[in-house]
Length: 161
Image (cartoon, rainbow, N blue to C red; front, side):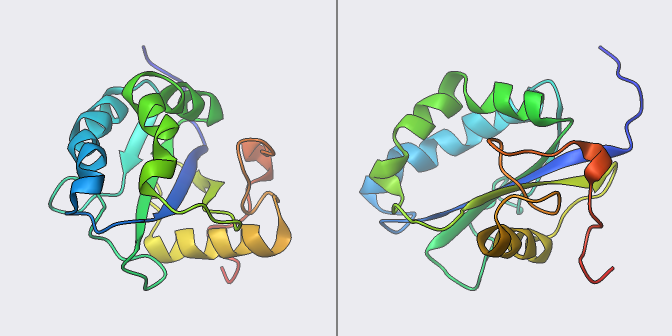
């Protein structure tokens, strides 16, 4: 299926604080599911890009300078395609088990924002968006699936830009 060119795409970041080291037996099911879930994401309608290291996932990419935090960041065509992936199949199963593997935290650990089509967000950009969301709540600069904003309200990639 072909789609008309778009001016913006949806960036998403979510981070999680591990309860155990990645190589621990307690995280084996999670780690074993990474490649299959990423393969489904890569083939999903609306998927554009995801952050990954040479290992094919992002578990060894530092975020906020904390070795107990892991990051997932991707770009999608829109909120509908992201939501369709998130709440189906094996990804949904992993979401249901997240409390086994990750600490419960009160601050925002996920953020969405619109990026110019073709832009690939950096970890620093994702950290900035998360911090903004934590400080100001959902705005066109950084928002959530529950409180989203249309691409027409997109705010520059960097507040300093």
